[in-house]
Image 1 (cartoon, one colour):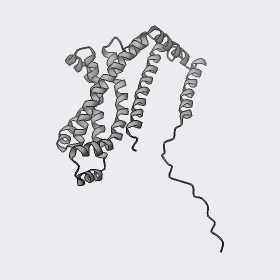
Image 2 (cartoon, helix red, strand yellow):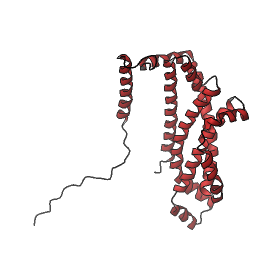
Image 3 (cartoon, one colour):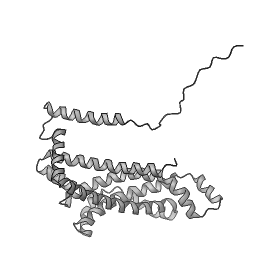
Image 4 (cartoon, helix red, strand yellow):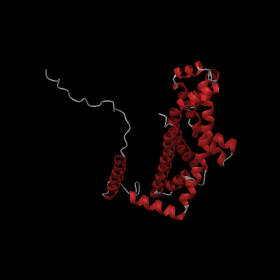
Length: 264
């Protein structure tokens, strides 16, 4: 008898595996910039309404050299940090309570569902009446925008924890606090961190809107002033800085994911 003709079977279990494609990311960004520059250079785009990337870079360099960029960036960064931290701490506390306790869920989820769809920038005038035109009203607006998505993410994360693990902890006689610390919180962390990616973007959006309404410093106020003066190169320079701010915040969340979710 001859041995059966065998052929290696290719491994088919690699689908949806994350692979880094840094060159593709850089190439797509560079391609967009080149198309943008070509559109302005060839006259397809009016430089008054769409300045070239070179003009935007020149405006950005001038702002950095004058110190105005640092002043506006620090003002916005301080508001984003304070508002995001406040909204996140409160949102996590309420979200975990809603996810763990049935009474808190019955009382909290209808309120969250009713208040979450309200555009937070629409209630900024109310915050100004309550806290004044200074920093507290802007921080409160950002915190309100961050609070509700954090509650939903935390409660959803707790719901996603396998109940078999909770029952296993109970069967081994673990106290409730140990089950929360060792099973519920680690299990809910991926969903909570995914929610952070959304809330940092919401914080950046809201700080711009709040600064456009009632601030003299900050990237939102700077972009609004540049638009009123038709300084579109400075306007886009401010937008580029805002985009970099959002990317940096998302990078910090990604770093937190790598540190906190090494067990996955």
